[in-house]
Image 1 (cartoon, rainbow, N blue to C red):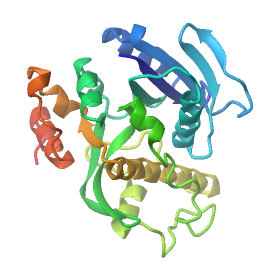
Image 2 (image 1 turned 180 degrees about the vertical axis):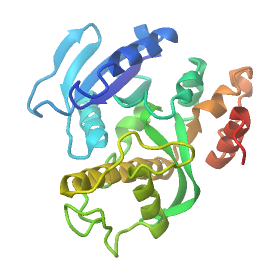
Image 3 (image 1 turned 180 degrees about the horizontal axis):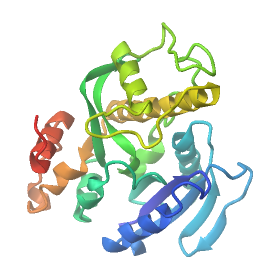
Image 4 (image 1 turned 90 degrees about the vertical axis):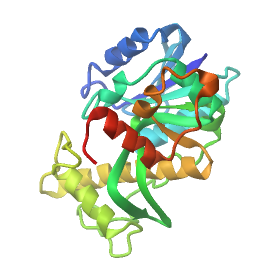
Length: 283
């Protein structure tokens, strides 16, 4: 199986060990020889040409307009223009080994075969206690976009990767954290985003760098909020393309089942019920 790994970073000051940690994860699962690695650096000039760093390892300039989402969109355009094709694409950001990381242990390589066979997206599914409204859609769960797999053919055909390229539609001014009255997301969703970014506990976790007061911090709040909205919107795009979402822990729990006898993916919230049971998390 051939894997194209699209690893997005913004320089090396933050998460300096992330690439080594990713290599270690691949080596632990015996997948290094099957991987082609594109390091996509959003801190580089967009005009910089790719640089070969090692066999099957290239450094590419990214597109930081919508953080990792615009970087992946550019990388997929470039990859699809080449003669090389792959079985799966692995989408990773340099923050993959932060916050909740148990999903990194809920993996065995046969899960990739299942993901390809089911035309699915494999990752860690996050959820809110209740559904939220984003645009015309009501949704409660999404794939955490710091670490997930998709079939190559599905990935290069998927659009949009960045559903929301800027913050104008959501906030009343560039340096405020106040949402517009006509912002296309429910008040509950606005409250969830604000609570998370201000460092309140959300499902037993808090964000590692809470947003404080001040114009610069409010601009950072907007950028992070936009990334949250693009992350959730990607799940909406996947569902619209009939690409089912699979949770690492749920699929890992079926490792004793032969591939031919594996069931279709359960609805996302049912997968999460099983995950909570496995992890001993109360309903």
